[in-house]
Image (cartoon, rainbow, N blue to C red):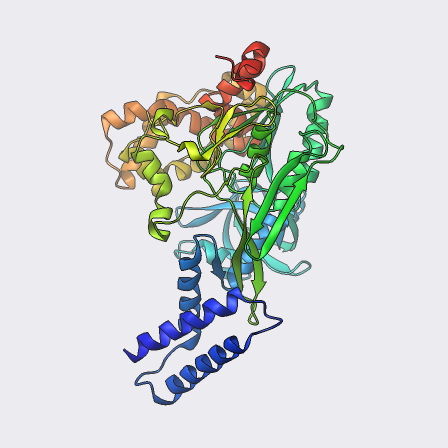
Length: 536
């Protein structure tokens, strides 16, 4: 009971601390602080057992923030650095993509221009020692690898490598440097006029990458654009605003934020932009969130382009970081996002954190991801777009203009085990490792590979045999339902290893219903205009 009283008091005080301006405490807050300190003194002096106060405080902070909303969170000091890296656009290390295959660190690809590539480390190399310590066949974890390979720019790490067809182990000394993290992983021309860009996050480097991508596509004759925001979980607000500004004419609201302690703040377009004219399609799905929803919501509200896919995640809360004295941080919700028409992007969390966390699973179970008729919005949330007066709805996520159901035809427990146990990816990496020289010789360019390489039945048979080694018993019905999808994945991931992620995405897109719908709409101007103006 004494412990519970302590925890409740702690929750109470933390609630007030995080919600108040730290520059000025009221008399009431001082009294609460004194009360909190007294509780700590009592615990230190009289509690029956030893108490780890740091862990208790962290637990209390996590729980109280969870009670506020699903996106106010506590981040410990180690997690702060890891969280910031993808958004800052770089980290410091040796510059390799790797995976753990058969309990060995395999280099998937040295990052172009990075320190590992400069010293001659190649895709397929297996790291057996780091700074004299054996790392092969010891059950090493990904977190351990990061600790050993990442470090301050200018520091060095010695790596011993086993390379196929080399009798002796190879010794490399790599000087760590800044390694870029790209937010655009695919850019290419679909045909003579349609360009494609896939954006995976809204980071500090996003706009520079976007400008280069657009310039490159325009040089190739791009007049129409597919912007793929599927599985994009968001990022910086200012980057979302700047990206939307590239498409929408000047002095128009992109998004506004508002909260009890934060007055309404509007973000508007300028007269500058690299694609203010031209047909535009944005691809979204249930994993497109936050900044992705800001961009797609603004495009939809101003009737600037078409949104294709499935209803987006529904994350429309503005978080502000508050750094604590030990380097940890809380991200506290201070306002809500609204689209130009006044639609609230944030979905409801009134039923608590647990139900909120199951939302995507519930959508799947309720049929929402496979049938648009399963999605219901109350009339009270109805809005009209600002140019063509089309009906749109608020209250959680952005509903696309053209719905494309999720493809579940290849879903099976057998197929999911291939992913969960890492069998599929391990098989692909081993196949590439064994056949790399032959593949590069036979398919020197992507267009040759794309046209000629076939994932044969014998390759699939070898995959099934590998799965059985991992105790995944073959399910004939599941295999038949999954095998065409597996052919796509295997071909795509081999392309990723031989070429770049852009080529991998090109292969995947050839079989994507969302992508094919976008191309169909952009090739038919009458259909595009009909959908944009909601003409039946």
